[in-house]
Image 1: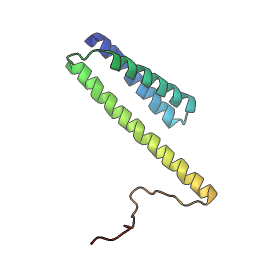
Image 2: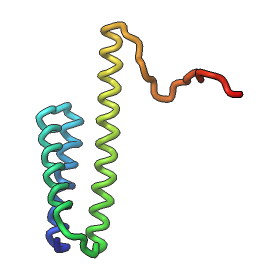
Image 3: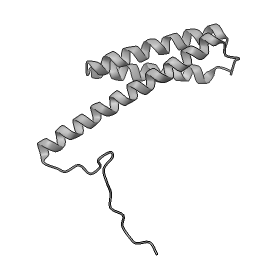
Image 4: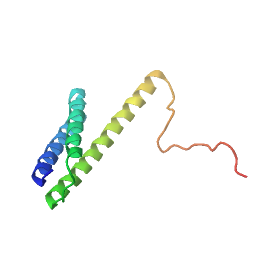
Length: 110
């Protein structure tokens, strides 16, 4: 894959990650699913290409895509946690897992 083709694919990935962020913010399920399909397609394009010597522009776009993807992942996790909390409140069921919670050790150390 040439640097020009890689740059084009990375630009598309950045656009898709931005669309995903907007879909997450608006809780737009169709947009979220569409972004997931687009990201998978673009990852396939990136995987199919031969490794090239990355120029500064490609490195910068890769780092930006990595950061955007991480932010989107964190937003998805926050949404999932809020949904779980609301469902637990409706059903009266206790949370089985609480992030940062304390857990008792079972068994003893000799």
